[in-house]
Image 1 (cartoon, rainbow, N blue to C red):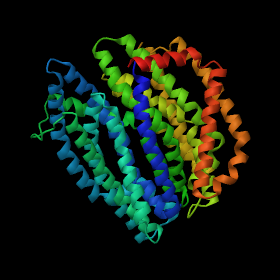
Image 2: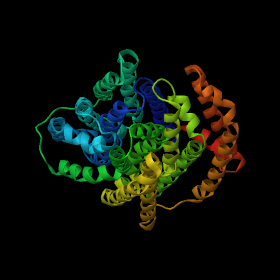
Image 3: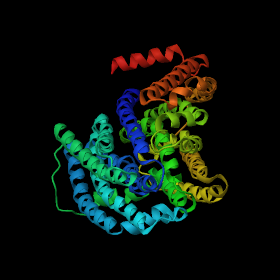
Length: 524
């Protein structure tokens, strides 16, 4: 099984992208800070593209398109039949995206108001709100660009060229870092405008990269006259529920952001945004990577009648997800504030901002295992053509999130939205897991049952050690940039080493497991 090898390839590139995203966010914290300009960009102008990337590039389109593409490619027509289906999907998708983009730009004012709650608590001036609307209009074209890129990326994933699609987000981060570093303005408003422009430029670079990669792989896409034939109608039928199912966490975060803009003071959206970005680091490395690999892998196995192999693959996916997620959860609970200080506390981002952002990160991290497991479990539904069950559960989790926000914000302030999001995601993953088990589509094997409690103990051992050693690194975390990064590298490195050692001490993994993994790698 090549799951570990594929995850290593995707995860390595995703790690590079997420590290660059942290550099981008640290520059944004320095030059924009935590005020109305940063809330307008992070809460609205950048939230909309991020949501669409999660829904389409990493969610709904892939979930609907990849099984259908694989089914065509596995049939009598082979890969040419798969490419023909992709061309017909593109013929319908392109005009829809163009029309959708025009409509969104025209409706940018009400969209901005809806996504931010009108920034009611901040009471912005007419000029400030108009500025937020302008930022939204600048970033909206990214939605069409990333949706087209997701179609090409889905084809490459189906051809097992996972690394190409995983490398694309690096270009977005490079564009945004270049904008912040070379073109930041005299004040936070000018810099936020530069951020918005670099988002759309980054989207164009991503699409061009995937077009080039497809040509190198021998995939040639031709524009056809749009026709709603049987296959395209099936694709569209699957996309809508898959969008809600795969993007439940994004929809929850969107609702949380809107309620924060409506009910919380200036800077709260930015605290939540930066906390979510840190929380997204392990999610991007593990959850999205595993979800990207598992869907085409399981769908191919099921199409060949290899049900036992599909279940084995999903067991190992859950095992990998928890192995890599549990230590991140414990670290974010225990040393969230030092991590935020080291990354963001300089320039316009103050010590109080870092403290409040750290609280939000700890709240988000409670749901980190469930965020990742949703990505691992939903392919078990999508690969079988069932997009309705995940959407029902996603809708229920959204209701829980809204109720949680309304109940927690008055008492917990900006900590309420992350906590409500974590709670709703946990309920979602519990329902997904239970239903798969009831249907006989999943059963935890002996290896998974043995490892989970041992991994939890190993993560706790690591957490106690990090808590005890935090004071040693604390002076470095507010020093010069080089000192900060060295301190953070030491903190992360020590945590990884301690967790790895604890995993062997607790028996979560044995030397024989490592030898078996190395043999598997050498044979692939």
